[in-house]
Length: 240
Image (tube, rainbow, N blue to C red; front, side, top):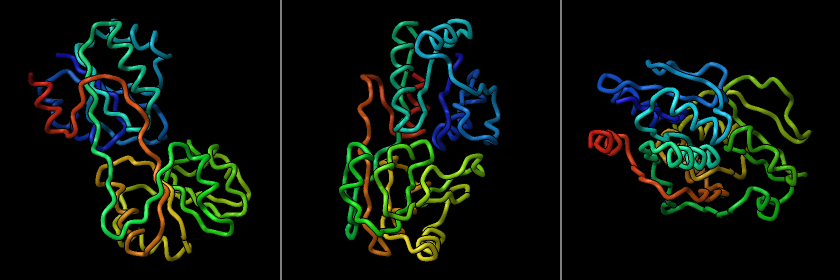
């Protein structure tokens, strides 16, 4: 069986490690990271060219199953994959980690879109944008706040706003590391997507320890499709 894994998350990497010996696996990466981790299988990098391009690839590569292991907020790719698989008649499953839920001591404010953050975070605040550089265009309204955004690769362009800067670092980070970072930078607000999982949960735990408020973006709507919530369940689904 030939399996295309739309990868990029730690869950997708773990799945590939579990199934590579049993199936013919191809991993697909969007190419957002300049030096991606070796996945130990055939890997393609870059987009497919929309739904039509993905349909053509599925047919050309003779793919039997597609596992969408992309980030929960990679909504366009998730919808493209669902539509392409429906057109090509290819079996399809979404591997998605469970979302985070607040615990005692958490102070979370939910938003649908990051443009809403302007009305929540007061001017003069120091804000850690734990959302990735691809979202920075959505924070143009945060004038009068000091902004920090962490990236994996050293940025090739300057921060898009004069009131902010990039911080370079490769996750995962421990709770202790995040607490130390927040204290050193004087972080007062944390902005994140509800990505779920354990690797990036530490910044939320650090915010709770420090009593920092969090702005949490809700997950986008996903297409009607089979969904599994763990690598173990995805392995079982493939075995069926």
